[in-house]
Image (tube, rainbow, N blue to C red; front, side, top):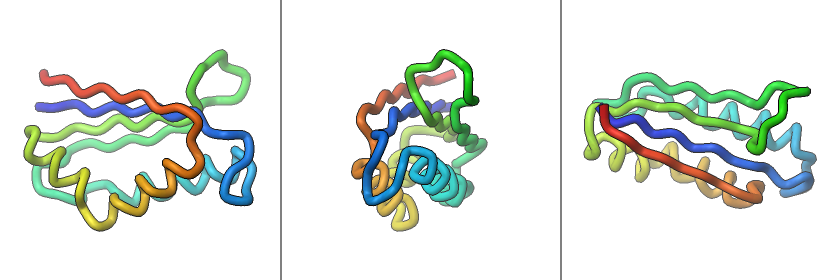
Length: 100
């Protein structure tokens, strides 16, 4: 199994919206990517809780049967516009994939 984790720090303002609006939109877009390809398992998206000390604003945790499933997800037509939106509103991004 391959686990794919991505964290984003959002800009305070981008695309004519504030951080909270962009976070809400990004979460909805990412939630819509669940079960897109064969071999895709669990997908969780969470916005950081207010008041917690964190360095990132949004996290994605997802599981894939193998690298081929993750690769298929990355280029899926539903996922592509999500990546475009995130690039326009994000100040920093961290990603880690690991096998279990």
